[in-house]
Image 1: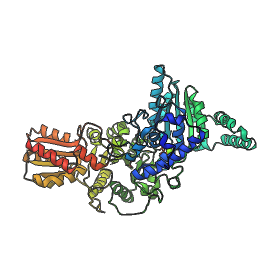
Image 2 (image 1 turned 180 degrees about the vertical axis):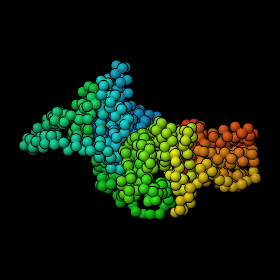
Image 3 (image 1 turned 90 degrees about the vertical axis):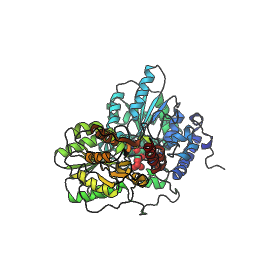
Image 4 (image 1 turned 60 degrees about the vertical axis):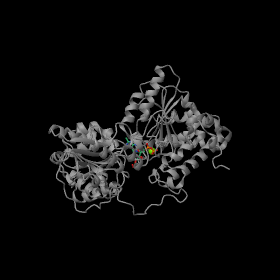
Length: 618
Ligand SMILES: Cc1ncc(C[n+]2csc(CCOP(=O)(O)OP(=O)(O)O)c2C)c(N)n1
Ligand SMILES: CC(=O)[C@@H](O)[C@H](O)COP(=O)(O)O
Ligand SMILES: [Mg+2]
């Protein structure tokens, strides 16, 4: 007897639309149990998915998907959506090499109407779809599902501002679980809490409930009436000021509330805003109790739960940063640390506890984070912005216009540089060298091990201008960081192996490891370049004058990367040696185990060996 008898009959939302209320409730129960079991086997995002089971069932029941468009913000909460849209079997390959993505992807399914993963894009995209449908004379509903965390990004409000004046058929559903990854921050969260606890609304609910107790037969009528009553009694909301008809808050786990409400809203024209209240981790006590721990999980025993506190394991670059941040803060009271909603991922939990007045989680607001830090730097404090390489992309103009152009001493700790693995193309830090090296005034460091990371963080901190230290997700080669901090001469690389062979390998960051692994067989010189900007040009030219092949190695897009700069220096010097650049190809690299991805793009030792050997043959 299957544990999921009803779920196993669902291969498309059309089947969901044929279910009655009792069956829908059963489906939600089975779906939640399936997700818990499946994600415990594969790893992935868990608490956000457990919290959106009923909402997903209701949306696919009420709307004619994929004709009606659902755009999921961030999209980390779409596992239930993927299961109901024909990918139940595929969930066994979730986030694995050539497997199902952890985020919606247009290339993966027609039900994935828009590729997300970087947050706060859903309202813009859904509005675009709604306006297009209107222009094409198509009757189509467009729905954006956005979390309270994602709602803190400016882009979400840019979209609300525009949507409010476009008389398009757009429904924005705010999935308010009072959590980002960390606890939510900012005034918006306080506002949403006030909406939820609004005296007027709750008084009417209590009165309504009283009536129902007396006359249960009125329950169905009252449910439908309540939705409209709410619209009338909830005080004018921020969202109505933007031109939306606001409804809610309603219980996002109650199908009896969700379905009639969505059915009503489906028939209403114009921009509508539905506020649903859910619990992150809902239905799994351990995740309800600790939605942070269960936000992104590895494989785990869902009966026993995630076993925390087990020490051991290699030090990660993130931990190196977190330890350095606290040590540096103890030495310098001018240090201020800024994160755009990635306290845990950036290793800042201890700093936040030990230095609460110098810790700033600005929410999912990368653009604000950079310029906020720039403002701080104008006043003589030293801001450290901890930000994933991929998320810094969101704040590129702020980096150029507010930080580099004004040559302000803002330091960026760029975590997740290079290939990140399971999160895939949306999260690889594949481009930061390319988008940083062209910026005047910035210093860009690429540590090759954990100790060098600590020393470079210190060097960047002392630097009186814009700086970035980019380091990969996870652990390094295992070089224990020295407690002492020693500044490195800016722009100085180091020769790690003097070879007599034809090739010299110039490694940036983590690529020093595969470079050293293959050096002996080619009797190659190996340089740890340390700085992508400013480049150690003397070292480059010295090696280019001794070897007929210069090989650059970087975990970054080849176009515009560090290798391009090495090639430019050699070309400008008029030297005749050849240059082989090893790095990421001009395409997006998908998700999967990092070792498989490195092999796919030739960044592992075998790949480096093969490319160098082939170049030497030519
Ligand atoms: C631009 C951007 N910054 C940061 C992140 C990292 N991130 C992923 S999910 C998340 C929290 C989202 O909170 P919410 O929208 O409330 O969704 P929930 O997890 O609560 O369902 C963050 C900060 C991201 N995906 N995109
Ligand atoms: C969905 C999202 O963007 C984050 O949860 C991200 O997946 C975190 O990445 P790490 O697991 O590398 O911290
Ligand atoms: Mg949330």
